[in-house]
Structures are given as C-alpha cells and as structure tokens.
Image (cartoon, helix red, strand yellow):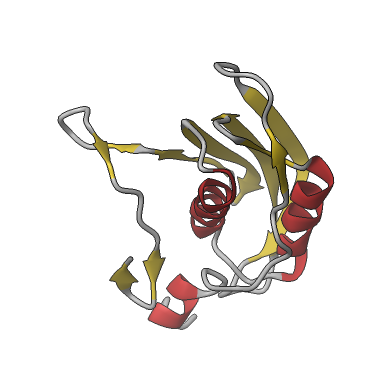
Length: 145
C-alpha cells in the first residue's frame, strides 16, 4: 500500500462548504452544546467512509450559530475526502470565524476502525504549555496561517 502523502494530509482542509449562518445573541454568559451523531466523511487515502459524532460547545458573544445552516454545513462533509483529525480542526476554525465566540471546543468521537476508537478534541483559544491562550491556526498547504 502506498505511503501517506502531503496531498492526503491536506485533503479537504481548504474545501468550500456551505456558509455557517448566525443570528444575534441576546444573553451573556451561557454555553451552547450541539451534538451531531450522524457525521460522515471519506478517508482521502482509502476512500472508505468514516463515521462519528461531532459535539460542538461554545460560549457566544454577539452571534449564535443558526442550526439549520450548521446541519447543512456538517452534512457537506459526507462526500469530502478529509482525515477526521483535520475535519475536527476545520469545523472549529470555521465556527470561530463565523461567530467569534468567547471560547469553543469541538469534539469528534469516531466509530471503531480496526479495533481502535478515536476521539479528536480541538479548542479555541488553544492552550499553550504555560496554560496561556495562543492563536489558533489551521495548517493550509503545508504552512501555518
């Protein structure tokens, strides 16, 4: 079987997906948790499907995610070739860009593959070793942005 390539590693990261729409938040200091138990995508190397549950937690500032738009956005991953580690980070990146929350955590819990289950957790702002917030970045074309 051929090795993993940079093309495999970057697959899907810059894909154009449906827009995440928002609506004006009316209250401060609360948390929104949304679970999507029907996540699926395609492994960019093998072409096999990946399945899992995506859980999104965030504290809104001025905007909240519109749920129908979020559903359409998440459904668009179905035919996308992307590793699930990248998918979780892309989802986080796109949500932060859309709503600019106080904080956000995206967790992907994926069904077993070869006897292994995998959970991927991405948070914004990310924590550095010293416990201080750092700038979130998404690897694109082999470079940090």
